[in-house]
Structure formats: structure tokens, C-alpha cells
Image (cartoon, rainbow, N blue to C red):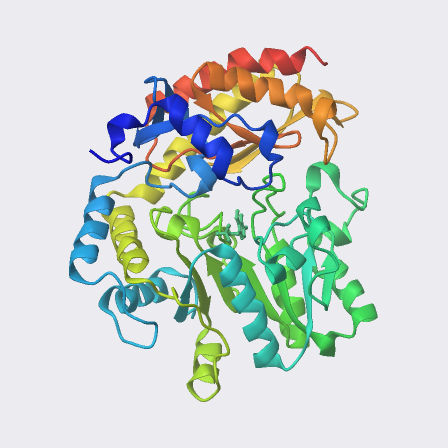
Length: 449
Ligand code: PLP
């Protein structure tokens, strides 16, 4: 027996070791009390005492096929037995097969893929490539965005996680978001911000369009509040970009692969980017993986221009094999239509909850990508906790999340917006169970009304 044998790891020992040696993301380490997790299956995970939690987050919105899907685990095992690693300069089967599948599944003429270790690296490469292809430097990104935690991706990110990394990458210009519930322009009719193109055109007047390489947006904003663009918004950005020779990058790291009830979020509006970045649902997060997929025009450009990018683990065979298996499972098990149907059930259930809970100000969602915005007053829309709230100011939402966890429902929130993003394989009974727990814990939010 070695000290790493599973039976010597009690929950307490795991907690103590973790607290002593592991640095957790975006946290004050001493304030943490992580649950020691022993295992998972489907939409559930459990701790060392056998307490089970319904994972209504899909962890970081990546476990789209749920925990421990047997076919996915088996595909990784089979690849590990055949070839664990070969450098990115070689032709390797799972890598080529995944790239071919991506060309078939992604919209429009998106064709060649560069595989990375996650979403941030995909965005880093997308922006650098856009700069090389256009010969321009500036990139326009939005405020309510998250594009990753590496240096460049953090500079593209608009939310407060960027602050500690400033000044960051040069040449990033920001635009406002089509947050229709709280329109930053006060929603004049027609609204230049919520319709997209007019706001972008105005920014370009001051920035000089001939210096702008790319516009990068999440077609549906994920961590920053689950924001769905109004009809026509993405098309309007597309038109402005085309008019000025600017490349349009869609970051679908969170929203891609069935999350919104279509294979890709941009499919809802039939708008095709020049570069699509993905990760998370690409392989359900079983092995680190991301991708940058580029249009036929950029693919042609790459035939006789250098691609200035590389990672030791670009196109890692274990990751790509899990990607191939994940996409096949999604096709064989009709995961996207299932997500759409479960999303309708979730949406209907949330609408019913809004009749009983005045703290529900807005419900936004399609597929299994829902946000519930909590308010102190429906008329004034005063948020239950303010933007960027910390400590006691954030407590009303913190208490609600804790109460849900105590009832076995794992949820998170972005300030006052609850994020409901269960695995795409969730069942109707599990959706109903979560709605029942939400019904109980939303009373805590109503108290502030
Ligand atoms: N882009 C979006 C939209 C994301 O939601 C995330 C992560 O949550 C990223 C990029 C960064 O991905 P990663 O953490 O894999 O680098």
C-alpha cells in the first residue's frame, strides 16, 4: 500500500491537503472550504460522506455529457493504449478526424482548425492570426465579456477580472453590450447599442477602421449574465465588419456544442464568423482542449503564409480522441434536440416560478443556457446584489446558493444572475427536482423585496 492508495484518502485528509497545497482560481485561499469530491455520474457528483449534488452548472459549463460518460471514458482509454502523445508536427488520426468533424459541424465555410489546451489559448491565437491576416492591430471587444485568463485573453475580457492584469495587451478597444434588460444607452428607439452595427460604426469613426483587425464577441454572453442579443444584432455586426474588412471572431467557448439548443449559438441567427473559438463542450472537458476554426478564405491564406503559433500540447491525441468521441455521442444520442426539449421544460418551469417569486426580474435562455436575474424591485429593476458586489453586499445571493447546495443542488451566479446550465443529458425528472429546490430557496431572495 502506498500513501496515495484511495482508501487512505478520507474526505478530511483530502480537504486538509487541498487547503495546504492547492491554489484555487479567483479566490482568497484562506476563505475557501472546498467540498472533497469522491466521484460523479451523469448529472450528479458526490462527496466522501456520500452526499449527492445535482450538478446544475455542468461544472464550468463544460461537462455537457455529464460526469463519467462510459463511451467517452473508453475512447480516452483506447487512445491512451494506442498513442498518448505525438508532437503537433505529425499527422495523427484523432487530430485529423476531429478537425474534419469540426469542418462539417461548424456553420458556413469554417474549415481548418488549430487545437489548443482551452478557450483562452484559442482566443489568443484567433486575435494574433486576425492581426497577421489583416495587417492591422486593434481589436474591438465588449465590456460584459470573458475570454480567458492568459495575458492577451484577459486583456480582451471586459469584466472586472481584467483589472488585476492591466494595462495588458495594447490595441484593445471596447464597445457596450446589448443588455436589453438594462440597456447601457437607456434603450432609445431605435437603440444603436442593442442593434449593434450603429454603435460599432460610431466607435470605428474614432478608431479608424483601417487599423482594426477584428471584433470579438460571445454571440450569447456566458459568465457575464447570460445575455441573448436581439434579433438582427449579430448580422448587423457582420455587415459592419464586412464593410470595413474587419474579421469577426465568435467566442463560443461556453455557448458552443448544443448548449443553447443548436450546435452553435450563432446558428440561431445564421451568422457565420471568420474565426470561431471553442473549448468546453467540444469534448465535455474530460481532457483539456480548445479550438480555433477559421474560414475557407483564412484557410487558403494559411497555405502560403506562416502560422505564428504553437503549443507543446496543440492537438493532444488524448484530447482529440475525447473530442471525436464526444461529438459522435452527441450525434448518436441526439443530445442537441434533447437539450432543446429539456430547455423548454426548464424555461416553462422558471416562468411558473416567476409568478410566485417577485425577486425574479428577468429570465433569459434557450436550450440549457439560462440566466435568472434577481431584483429587489421589479419596477425599478434594482439588482438583488450590485454589479461587482463582494463580502456582505453579495450575501443575499451567497445565502441562496448555499441553501441550494444544502438541499443537494449545485448552482452558481454572476452577481445577481443565477446561472442554470445543467449537463445536456439531464433528465426531465432532474429538471423538475432542481425547479422544486429553486422554488424553496428563492424565498430567501424574496425576503429582500
Ligand atoms: N471564453 C469564454 C466565453 C469562456 O466562458 C471561457 C471560460 O469560461 C473562456 C473563453 C476561457 O476558457 P479557458 O478557461 O478554457 O481558457
